[in-house]
Length: 189
Image 1 (cartoon, rainbow, N blue to C red):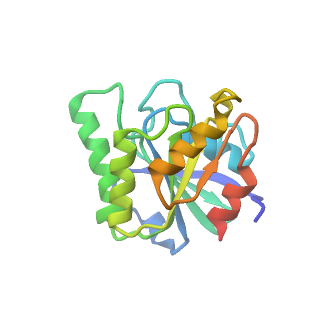
Image 2 (cartoon, helix red, strand yellow):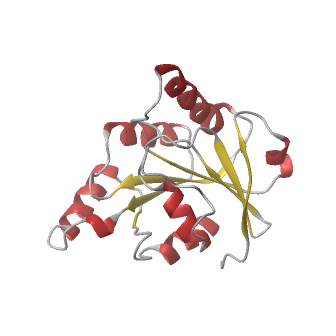
């Protein structure tokens, strides 16, 4: 499916009537600074749809984007390292936990973004396990593959696949537009 329109709707921190519209919801989750915003922007073909930052933890609410007047994409706050107080980190964790696992909202897909160069962290494994426990439809994206040395690329992806298990992994680079079509097909199917 080709993306013909994408616009930011609003940021939320709890129940919101906008999500009662019964449009399919695609959630994007990953650790802080993994490139969620860059993935969203590259998929949508817009440079400034989702605001990206070099500082971990910029996203402090669930940002909702309307795609093709038919889907909601939700950019969740990052987990892991965040430059914020303990209280703020706890609030972000509770917001992620609430939306994915306790809210009345159902996600059509959950896009779990990991850093291909670093590989999955303990927090990535914990998130993946919880998503599996709740039987979410998970897409795993190995982002920033352009940062991997060519001599280590195949081995790194093979190692990530071995760690992630049965889930299909989509190698992705927002900079080089690698994996864009594959990810779009997975999201919209």
